[in-house]
Amino acid sequence: MILSTREIPGELDELLEEVSDSLKPICPSEAIDRYLEYRETELTIQTRSEYRRKLQHFDDFCEDRGITNLNELDGRTINDFAKYRRRESVGCDEPLSNKTMRDDMYLFRSFLSFLEDIEGVPSGSSEKVNIPELGNKDGVRDIEIDSDRVTEILDYLEKYEYASRSHVIWTFFAHTGRRPGGLYGLDLCDLKLEREDPYIHLRHRPDETTLKNGADGETEIYVSEDVAQIFQDYIENSRIDIVTENGREPFLTSSQGRLSQSVIRKDVYRFSRPCVLSKECPHGRDVDSCDAAQSQGSASKCPSSCPPYALRHGYISSKLRQGASVKVISGRCDVSEPVIEKHYDERDEEEKRQVRQKLLEELRENQDGGGFL
Image (cartoon, rainbow, N blue to C red; front, side, top):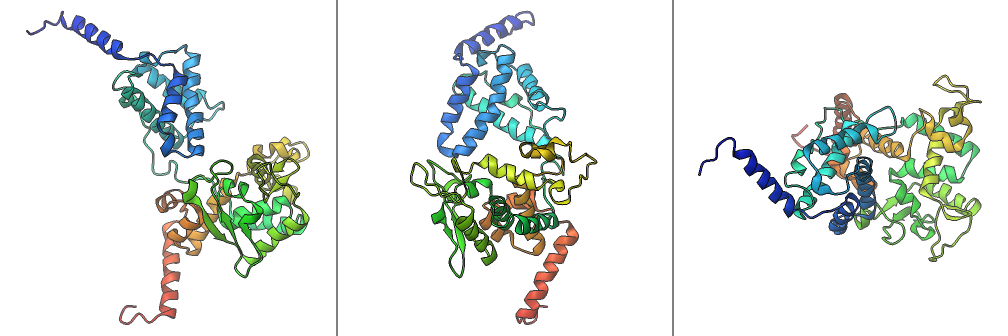
């Protein structure tokens, strides 16, 4: 039977009611718990924690708008959440970047797709999530600290705070390009310093100190003799001798036990402030009255201070400019080759050409290429 135009709306209403009846009520917090439990085996502890933090914004959004049952989710609400996430959830004047929004919306789409499978939201909800397009520079040029500036900071620490905790922290990041979790989890037994070829062993310990990529991130990192000496002198002269409740002897310590990652980050922010070295502010502030200059806890508020990631980025970019292969950097820094090429390679075409030229000239000098010049 062919329906008249007047009969179609009624039929659609009945169909929508049937679809609604097939859904099972679920609140936002339960939905998030179910989603993370569903993906538990494929995600690391850190990634699950990160996903929960990101999805908490959706939970907050729903609470603000009185949404207690996701069966009621529609395209307009999904659009409203995207606008909320970009601006209102940030808590500052600057909205989220396209790169961050893209990552968050991909996660949100995956979340809604899971809820569709368990009859938590209307079918097709995930397809209504708009994923921002990235421009050529969006999410590509990340924060980087200049290598000359790192040298100045290390020279300062060498002269005024040799083998101190701060000296060790900066030396580790500047020499290895690894993440803070690698330094945080080091125990004394992981440092093989009294050898002709000193190295440190980064280990993934699932129940206590983890690496971002789990067991795949475990590796032995070569350190120079000078770096090994700094680490050894810290252990002998500055380290607080502490054994944790589980019998481990952490490398970096405080009076409370293993040094926290937050304190590690604060030490990086602290010495990356230009006024620490020069006693002058490049931003025209009065150093004596600037909160970022006078308070170590506020060091991150300095426009020129930087997090540990800046050192990691700077290390990788510097090694690329020096001609190190992407494969070697990937193994040392625990980052995939495609990610290095997209997010860490700051060289322009001229710099890439010069590196290739240098390597090829060295090959010609050291090997007989026959007829190939």
